[in-house]
Image (tube, rainbow over all chains, first blue to last red; front, side, top):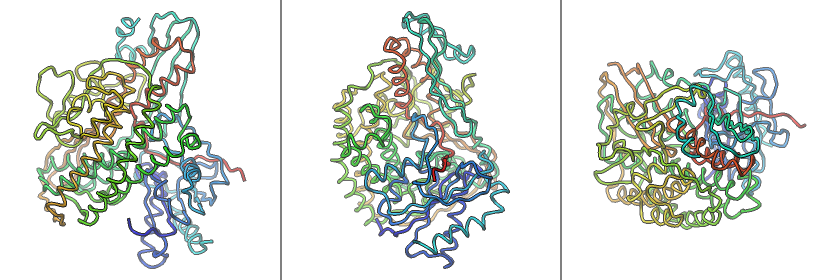
Length: 161
Length: 461
């Protein structure tokens, strides 16, 4: 495997499910900005994590800092972006544990910590969805604020501490 | 007792919305493993037993239909595999591969030997990562009496670390062959956009050789608690791919076979709609399937029951360790069949790598001549046989699509298992029965839904 870049920005979600795909949309845009030289690329990897779920464990292992971008139900106004860390939240996701396909990212991060494979720093950008349904585009509520979301994440990349 | 249960058909279950079995047990039992949200999609287990009478015993799937078939309409032939890879985060390689094969069938595209070998290897990587994940993260906690892999860590730290290591190796293998861990980007109708270099293949070979002892250790750990797998048998039909030329424990090529064919020829892949025979029932928004009986089993146990004699030496050894033999009708043993397949795919991958290294790898440009037509394909996803079909116009735009996932093919079989399991184990009480029913569903390794993964959090500070 090639040498790991110390920082990774991971966009999570499903572009087939409207606002669920916001993480993937944003990370793809960030990757383009990095390719154009606007954002750091030598020390930062931009990764479309899709619905990889448990694979996140391996993508974050060995990194110094992880920035996750995901659609998040936080009880806020649709289109709100919020920066938080895993310590700031309780996951209230209800899983049946019947299937591998239900994923609670907060639990995956907890497993990484228990196994001693967690990065030093984990930052999550949660974006409140307006709609999660079968649709290959973001809703207007989120689409109109994409630049604002990008600015918030770019600020994090410019101030890595 | 069982005679009564066997008389209940799934059609009745769906039509009446409840199952009534006269079984004397004594205690009332109410089990409801329930998730209402239609957005995420879940399976519900519902059992009501009053005065020893089973009033309700259902496997319900209230998942919202996802209309992927509609999403591909109007899209180019070479977009399809990318779009459908997002159906599932665990079997995204299988969805991409089967879609690519169906598109190639529609357009009449043949692929090179190198493409076939590399795709096989990519497919093995997904079997490995999915099986290790399933047995290690979902089944093992059950066998150790733990709620999840997180709470299993303090109890069996070394075992969990080996599971994570094996899963990581499989992920690295997927990343090399598919371009990234999930949602492949190296597949294109007619070929590959990238093939691994010989050095990358040599590195992969070494990594896989190194992980074999860990896999054997994982098998030994699971074997140490395998006595907790419920003793439950229910003969059913087992459906999988079968490849005779050359005879192969196949996940990728072949015809559709069944333990109920009784000498009849296998079904060609382009007739898969005549195998699945999808139908609707009241208790589920997901479609159910049946072929020769009211239900059938798709998955590792089906592959083993049809092709087990073709497993690799280590695959056979693992099956023997657990006493798994062809003809097994205990659905809980599906997880053991997955373990045997885990060993098999590593050995089969090592063989494939040697073949690729002998012939050498090089980039092969792809040429596509468009034509109108319909194509069908079937492959074995980790959780069972997966069918896709697409139709294109002469410009290469998709006009129709159809896909049938293994989990939908298993729903009727899970219901039929429940109808035998509940009367057999209800005397053990509600908690034990609930546990056995949850373990049964998990044994099928269902892909109920992974279309959405969003976080759901409350702030504590």
